[in-house]
Length: 187
Image 1 (tube, rainbow, N blue to C red):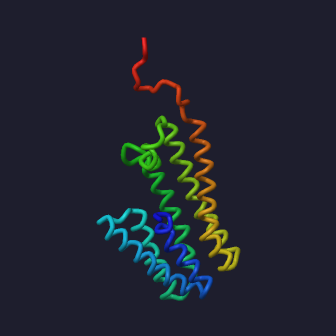
Image 2 (image 1 turned 135 degrees about the horizontal axis):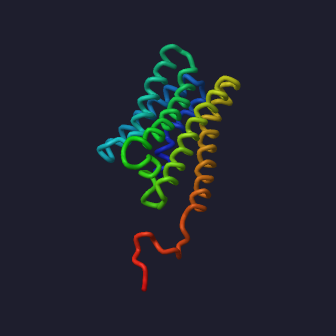
Image 3 (image 1 turned 180 degrees about the vertical axis):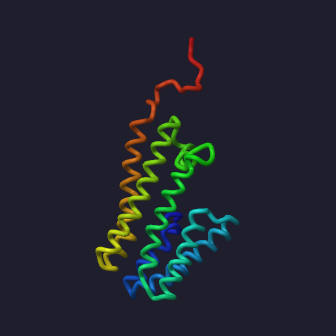
């Protein structure tokens, strides 16, 4: 159910695009993001940073798309969001005690600091590349192809990258029967 809630604006955008056009879909996206943000506030009395950043960018770039009647703005939003994520991952290595990926995964994964840094840099590079891939699709293909890429391509690439990261992490994890660094040794 949470996954459906997370993807609600994207699904609403795509359905509206299929039945109307990019401008109607952009309007629907703005409303969906506002609904999602409101529901998150009502349920938790707080809104995650990711939802706030995404909502803000949807409002700005979606608003410009509708006001100026130029679809380029909503298309640029995808690249800017990904570049902001890349910047967040990169900056987190220098600000605070732990890189962003460590903050997200450390409850489930144990790695040495150099591996956390490497993993964090991989995610920063991925989001940077995803922003440029969006520009390539935006400038070289039709709006219809771009809309499909936005919905299916971005999610697909992210899932494939996450799976590859999972395999990489599995290769770096100590065997389960290995003694833990902080565990007392017998005898």
